[in-house]
Length: 538
Image (cartoon, rainbow, N blue to C red):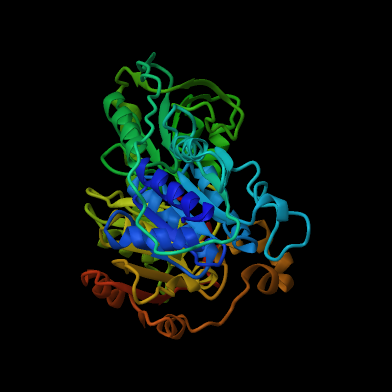
């Protein structure tokens, strides 16, 4: 006879597959044993792709990356206790990035909670404030109720009913006996379908006010909408690297710097797509009382950190503007690019912006590029606009360095295209355990390029990088680790090498991506503040 726990686990896995889940990440443990065995049996017959990781934090970000690049919901399965808590960083990022991450947390039965039972805690409130849906699926409950809970979790996580996508949790309470007898693959069940509200027609805006289009972090569909508007209306486009709108003649390579200058002071209206977070000057523009802000968003949770949005629309069109406005931005952008080229190539040691230029120049259409937070994504915001750029990803929901490598591995596996990650040495060290991939697991086609300045150089460009804080700076901000990242990578069985010149980097990047490899490139940190100060034209 099949136990209640095995039957419940079968139903959970069947429900996930029915609702379109094709990838599941598993961090093994005891209480999740029924789920693990059924997933393995189901993967063996090709009905699901199973990814096994020993670290729950990394497993969460791997699932996040898979969901980002595939556009489908991805589940991460853990055992009970602290294993669940390790998913919090990935859940937070998924919430703020609107990524359909499904947490399937195995749990002890409710009657053990609060009595000191081993590996037992209150798991249903761990992610409070970050979930689109949460439910406890209890073994022994009516199967119709269990099936409905699983279907609803996926529908809510994907925003299928018109709501905001985001993480959902199924807390699966499994009593003993956990397993008994032979384990079968998950049976096929009928999916539940939801139909969202029909799209609304675009709002037509009058021409006249000096307008720019701003696109922050966004998926390719949103990025394309920003490009289409800027092209049709003849407007300058200020697009962050991960906006997937940074292409074509309307996109400014140095938009953040231009906004901080004379052209930025002439802007009267901004149309916002995505989630702009990268540039202080752009955020200041969006918070200006003299600028009309229009946000294009199909959801009610629109982005408005400057509290100035006066019109929120699902789509917008603008009559073509006078070409002089765009031409002024294009001329200024070309001059600013020439200045940056001169500044970044006038140093003895390779700089972060120059490394970013080399990396972006080596990638293109049909590939994926992941950008680490802090300096790498900002350096990428200063390179020429590519004619055929790759799809670009970054964890800009909360803009942290947590899970950088695991996310990139997930993106490479989910997109199934050659992928490059550009990150800093602290991001790499923070998530180096993501390189531990078991012998039976799928390995990504991923090249990791590490801008190694032995510390957090971004802090040197901020207020506390000034000379009056010099005595404390190295210890509490720069935090140099002095690690040999090549040796660290090789310790995980990953091919790695150190490159010391632009020519060596260029040659290495020209090689085809074959499996997982790490390129460590020393870059200057001591001169970072001075370099940043000279980026803008005088």
